[in-house]
Image (cartoon, rainbow, N blue to C red; front, side):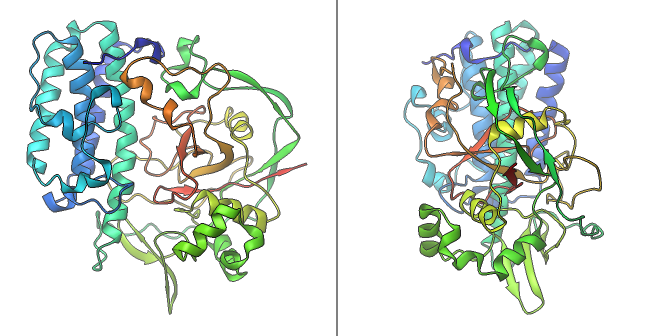
Length: 431
C-alpha cells in the first residue's frame, strides 16, 4: 500500500485544537450541502466531468480513511473493502478504481450507507486524534482543504445536474435578494511594475496551509499594466452577444472558434432566452438574469473572446496575484453555509473589488509548474503536478468556495472549454 510522502505537506504548525475544529466544521458542512438531496439526486451523474454528490461524500471520506487511518492507526479495518475501488479518484499509486465517467452507475451503496461510512470514519479519527503523530495531523489538515475543494465541486455538480431536469427544480427554495444598483463604469487600476514576488513561501510557517502547486515562491517581472477594478457583468456580456460576439471568428482563438461551432455555443451556460429577456438557472431555480451581477459559467475561450472584443486582454496570474496581495482572501461573497449560491453585484468602493468571491477569474496563464517545483513522491504527489498540461489558471474564489479555503496564492485550474464552475473574468490591459 502506498504511503504519502510528507515532502508534499507545508508545515503550517496549526494548533491541535484548531485542527480539531477545522475537521469538525469541514465534515459538517459537506453533510449540510447534501441535506436536501434524495438518494436519486445524490446518485445521478449529469456528465463525465461532474460527479454525483454521493461520490463526493464518499471520496472525501475515503481520502481520510486511507491516508490517515490505514497508514497511521495499527490494526484499523476498513469500513468496506470495496470502497477503496469505488471511491478512489485518480491516485494510480492506490491501484485500480471505478471509471470516472461511470460514477453515476454506483446505485449502491445508498446515500444512507455513505452517511454511515462518514460517521464511522469521523468517529475512528476522533478516538485516536490526540494520539496521532504530527504527520497524521498534517494529512488531516490536507484532507480538510481537499474536502473544501470537493464542497465547491459538489455544488457546481449539483447545479449542472438539476439544470438537466425539465421541471427546473431548485436545490434551495429561497427568495432572491433585492436587486443591486448597476455598478459604475469600469475603471482601471494600475498594477505593480518591475520585479514582484509571487507564490507560497513554504519556509514561512506564518503563511499557513497551501497546496504544492502554489509554490515555490519566486520572482517575476511585470510590465506596466492595469487591471479592471471589478468583474464583467451580465449586462456587459449581453452587449457582447448583441454585437455578434459569438459569431465573429476574428475574436476567437482557433480552438475556441471550433468549440463554439461544434457545440452551438451562443451564451453562457445556464442562460435562457425568453420573450421577456434573458433568464438563468441557479441553485434556487430559474430567475430573470440580474444585469449587475458578474457573468458566470463562461469558458476560458469565451473570456478571451470577450477581452478581445473589449480591446483588452486577460490578466496573467502574476499580475493578478501581485495586485491581490493587498486584499483579504476571506472578504467577499463566498460560501458560509448551505443555501442559495450565486454571484452578486459589486459594492461601491475605491480600488480593486471582487478579487475574492462571486466567480473565479480566468487568467491568460497556463497551469504550469513554478520554477523549482517538484511533485512529491507517493500517492498524494499525484494531487496537482500531473495535471500541468492543457489547463488554464483561474484566480480568486467563487460564491461556492468555502470561506477561508482560498488564498492569494491559490491556483485553480480547468481545461479552456470548462464552464460548469462559477467562472467569470476581470479585464487587464497594457499601459
